[in-house]
Amino acid sequence: MPITLYALLTWTTRDRAPIIDAAGAAFLRTFLPRAAELHRAQVIGMAIVRDHVHLLLYLDGLVNIPQLVQRLKGASARIANRDSVLGDVRLRWARGYDLRSVSPRAVPAAQAYLARQAVRHPGLAIPGTNGEADPTDSTPAPGSVVGG
Image 1 (cartoon, rainbow, N blue to C red):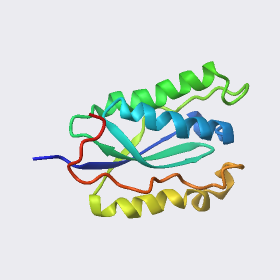
Image 2 (cartoon, one colour):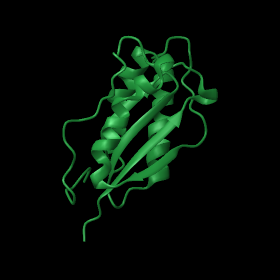
Image 3 (cartoon, rainbow, N blue to C red):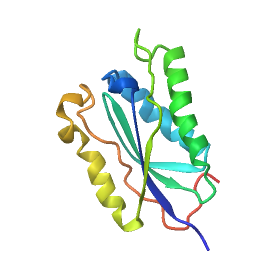
C-alpha cells in the first residue's frame, strides 16, 4: 500500500537573527527544492522571511528525515557562506527544527498559511520579494512516485 506523507518543516536562523535578504531568499528558493529531491522529498510550498524558513513537503515513505534536514540546513549554509550569498554576513541556522504532519486534505490550508507569512511577520518580510510565499501550483497525487 502506498504511503502519502505531507509535512510542514520550519527552522530559524541562529538567535533568530533577521539576516536573510532578497539574495539569500532567491538562493534558498533555488537550492532547497533541489536538495530535497536528493532525499526523496518534494517541496510543494515555501515561505521565507528574514529569520526563518517554512517548507511544505511531500515525503516518500522511505525518507530519512534527519538526513533530509541536515542536507537542507547544513548544505545551504555551507554553500551560501562559500559563495558569499549574504555578502559579509554568514548564514547560520539555529539547532533543531519543527516538523508537523499535514493531512492530504489540509495541504491547501498549509499552502495558504505559507502565503500569509509576510502578513503574519510584517517586520520580517524580505524587501524585493513582495513578501510572497512560493507554493507550487500542483500537489502530487497520493501514491505518485516522488524523487525515485
